[in-house]
Length: 239
Image 1 (cartoon, helix red, strand yellow):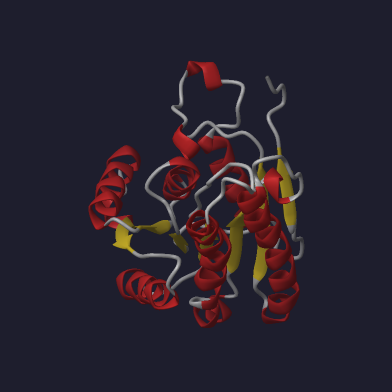
Image 2 (spheres, rainbow, N blue to C red):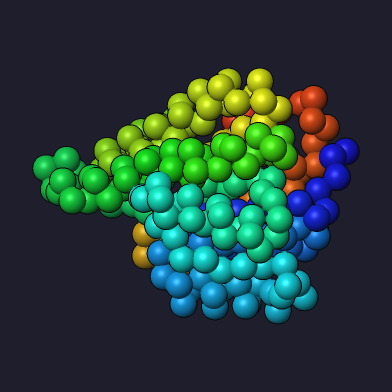
């Protein structure tokens, strides 16, 4: 089993939902974690909440960063290393969705989805390659089952997540020579606020954010010789 306590992770879009759940799981295992948001107040508030919930206020950092901008991601990497001394893990999680027929979808909506969900993953990895070469680190991208299963009204979201899945697998082949591990997680229905949903007891059948946090911990603990490069995750009994 790989030792993960004391390692440093950077999670994009970590103020709520999947990113927040992963951050909480990593802090609970003794890691140091930086989370990002486009809104600085949200990042700092979420970091404070995480610190209080896990009693690790010295080990969590909230940063303002926009995954759509490479220089913003480079700055987040620099700030994380300045605070914690190194960078071992990058979780490229930030994402959004606009849904509707191609007849209705606007170019602005298309660009926002692609720039955030796909180019944002490129920027997050590109900005941190040198840092992860030094630590023989781990990249984990959050794709979706929408990255392998297309559906009506999902052209922008499908395109972004198909892209994330393919991009991540190619990057895995690029970086394995440096001792860097790369995986993508492809969840189905998750109980979050995504796309205007409101988590409630009615969503108990869905994947919970702590479940995804547990998966990330398991990946990080796995013997370095073994790499689950693509993980599909579904609710056991969907409704």
